[in-house]
Every structure is written in C-alpha cells, then in structure tokens.
Length: 149
Image (tube, rainbow, N blue to C red):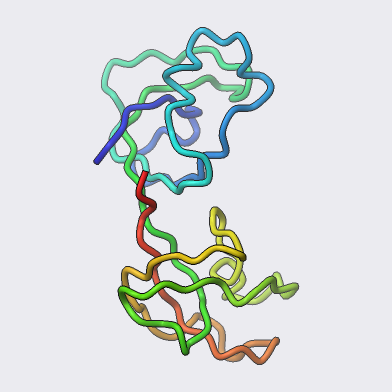
C-alpha cells in the first residue's frame, strides 16, 4: 500500500529508496510536519510516483526543499548465515564487519536493518557478491520482506 509524504527534492524521483529516520530538530514548528512525519521510523521506502503539479516547499532539513511523492515499503537485501537462509523463515544478520572495501559490505550491514533483530526472509537470492568472506562466514544473499507498518 502506498502513502503520500514529503521528501527532499533530491529523493523525489521514482525508484529512489531511503530509510525513514524520523523527526529532526529542525522539524519543530514546521507547518508541513504532519505531511512529512507520517512514515514509520527505521522502515525502508521506495518512491513510486512524484505528485504532478506539486510545488516545492521550503524545509529546514532539506536545503533544496521538499516535494510530495507516493512511497511504498520495500524489502532489503542482506547477507545472512547460510544455515538460516530459507524463504519464509526468520533470520538476523551475522554481525558487524569492519571490511568496508568488500563488495558484500552493503549487504552485511544494510541500512535500516538492526543486528539484534530477526526479519522474515521473502526470497533466497543466492551467493553473495564477494569471492570469499574475510571473516570466514558462510553467507547467503536474501531479501528480507518489507516491513509491516
């Protein structure tokens, strides 16, 4: 199900994804706060449509202003221990990884996913993008289901 919200103009393009982080200190007293602060914190969203004819509104957080868009929740790709990688089951991340140069790092520490939480696996995608894990972990790439709002 989609929702209408306001996002920074740099994100206001179909296909752009972001994790909603909640209210910033600059939001206090803003006349548009009810239109902006209507998403669930920590949830990943994808812009599905930009509202036609919508004006750009001034914003204390986004230097180029905000625009009205439609968004929907989306799943997150992640590397998890292979023994837990079954569609429909729940799993959590293997743990932090200091190897930021690794091609899998963005999947080992995906934005919007917490290490101590379990997530339902929507789909098993297969092998991770790295040739070998520098922490000697046996990992599988999966897509966690979109958050239920």
